[in-house]
Image 1 (cartoon, one colour):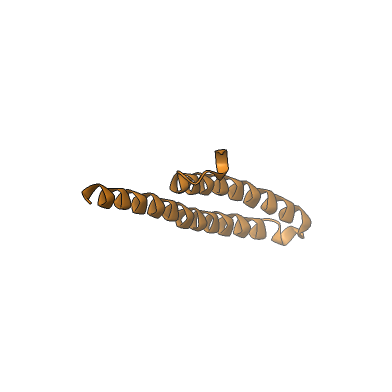
Image 2: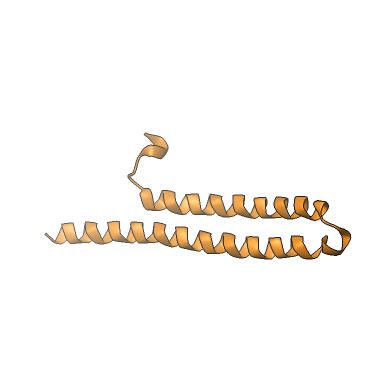
Amino acid sequence: MGIFNIENAGKKVKNVAKVMLIVNLILTFVIAIVEGDALPDRLEVIIPFLIIVFGIVLSYISYVILYAFGELVENSKSIKERINQKN
């Protein structure tokens, strides 16, 4: 079944979080470079710097939230398995 198999959903969510972090960081720098070239000289440094700072912060926040959700899924599956073993 490959990627559509929901057997290890928590691990897959955590892997998606890592990939999204890398993609978001790359896109942040690309957008900062493109926007920096399109701006007048006085804003050429400030705006790309702000784009990079906010892009990194937002990318990290989204990574932490998604990764934490993957951890939550894995932990709830582990708890469920332990409860089923006791019964």
